[in-house]
Length: 598
Image 1 (cartoon, one colour):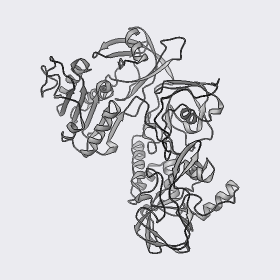
Image 2 (tube, rainbow, N blue to C red):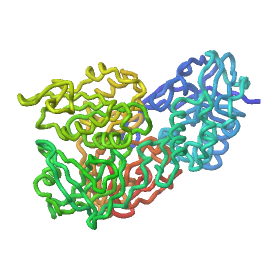
Image 3 (cartoon, helix red, strand yellow):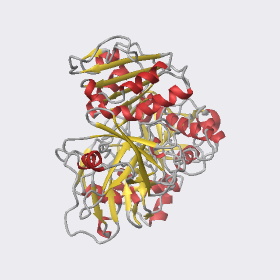
């Protein structure tokens, strides 16, 4: 007979951790007497980070006394109290390898349904005073699980837990957890998981991504785990590190944009790049200073024997200014292989390609791909520029759009010149733009876009934020809206209170190290390593570089970062290593000079 041993609640509080303030509700304490269970949580309970915990599908966290006994033995501890693992229900008799997703139980006057395993994050390690705990919960197959409240009511410690229905597919909590986090992922088991209606939407989305990966499994198909980190599921890079490419040609695209055609020095064809990917180049304008690393989207036709990148000259851009002023045909550029997950969505669904300024470069490669292979696909080309002098690729996009019979075009000039010609028939002689003003959310909202469209956006961050809101308002699914931003990405530090305005990335304080060089491409910083930094994640934090993480022990893959050059060593070893060309920075250190896409 299963039994409810303890009911535990706790409201969020601020906890000091590594010099920062964490808002968390993981400290739970037993309740005396009856406790009312409601749709979102128990009376007296709360979550500090609703993005990762709580909500209807994660209203009640459950953990088992058998797992308590297991961890007491493994960790050599005898100081556990009920609620130690952040659970609301401490139970006897509901082990993770027997309870199935979709099982239903009655406790007291309330009815519950099992929805998903616990998603482990660093806060369980904080509560346990054991940083390895998120990884241990997964590797030992003892994560615990969440319940949805089907019928609100009262529960009390000591009550019997009565099973009233079996979940379909009979997939246990431990099996479900391992299917997402551990390396073995048979396609038939993924498909089984997706047939369980009770499985929470987040886990369903993760398994759909894994199923798509399994269905596309061919040589060169994406590696990694798209169920945890879609951006970490790039195909294996075409080459390791940097190689020299020759500047075969240049072209002026607008008043501020210069294109460079790069070729193999021996004339061999270059490996094909996916439309939307980018190149990272290493520049040495000053021999006495560290090399500059910059990433530029590929703007030419995918599959061409040469790569085209297009560079905007920025007022304070040292790298772009050097490329515009000094690079000549016949020169060489040290170049990393094409990378990036911002690629054209496959299939026949309508496509929205929206950009501002030089943000046209990756979506132009997508337009080339559509014109060459999918001319029947419905396409919306939306672009904003200041005027004709600052409108790159105008003639080129016009020609491509004429080859797409189901294309729709809106070109917005915010400050058109007298000689710029406005008209509705863009792409034919006599029309330079269609709309006066900026490409705004209001304009996009009025286009009547189909709800099943896939959108690709590239431009300044405010532009992409506005258009993303407009597209979701028009009915597009958030997962069908992809964005590309070459500045440092936004950080993800769950539960951490902001310490003040964001700081510009900088080298860490203290005496510099003498170890391998760690270069952060998007932040423009190169730092010599020293063991005191701990991990690459901790070094990035010391540099005030925006980072993304959750478990900090090599489980969740939130920290997965493209490794453009070099090699890392892991300690502790992650639950599963990332695909080639990527690194989990939360548990790794440089093994030699490295270049990270951060």
